[in-house]
Length: 294
Picture 1 (tube, rainbow, N blue to C red):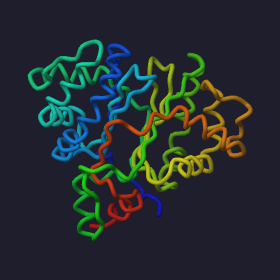
Picture 2 (picture 1 turned 45 degrees about the vertical axis):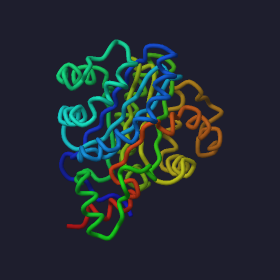
Picture 3 (picture 1 turned 180 degrees about the vertical axis):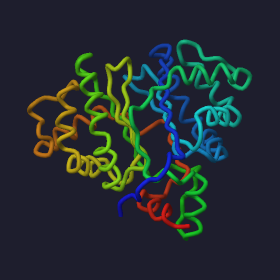
């Protein structure tokens, strides 16, 4: 089943905040800390009912922390709720970032929100499978339909992609941005047609020296890759010439799937150290059905 045609502005908002870490030693300590915070953060995010998905992952050889969220409403409202419910947990995480974060965040909320927004990477475009369903509506509608959305305090059945590819040059970044903007309608339609992607975003990092593809999806990573090569092969052909590791030997990707898939595997930062889903057992197909029911 494909996605219903979206109407109006999506209820959800994406946030991708990138925090440089103080040192390799700080990175190692944070990597040990984050799993101990998972339970508390999941509880806080479950209480903050506007959250759909949230994850923390160390990227770029552990030199940066990516905090990736999708939620209903505004970023300001989400950060207010997160500080209120998980302020002490955020304080522990922010100990390792550089430049220093304003802490305690509960006492310096406005400063902290500005700090996060200053490190937020905008997405030229992004995709949501069910733009008119809030996180609480997903759970309520699923339960009414006799579908178990899962316990949001448990590990999600959904999978994640956080692929970060190095861009060859400034000129390549310009061309890649133009390609993404020109092909946005086709890419968004492909996400809907594949029918396994909950949320997706494309964005540039590190002053456009890196290009990131960030998604949450159902099923195995290899099937997911196959589906997108089938739907978007020519777009990946055009993308590869602008990123390090891509060359003519991989094009067309539909005929060189193993080599292309390996590039994505090698660039993917997964699984995330912190991973939360408001409905950990629901598939995109479940959500498509729920969006069309009263």
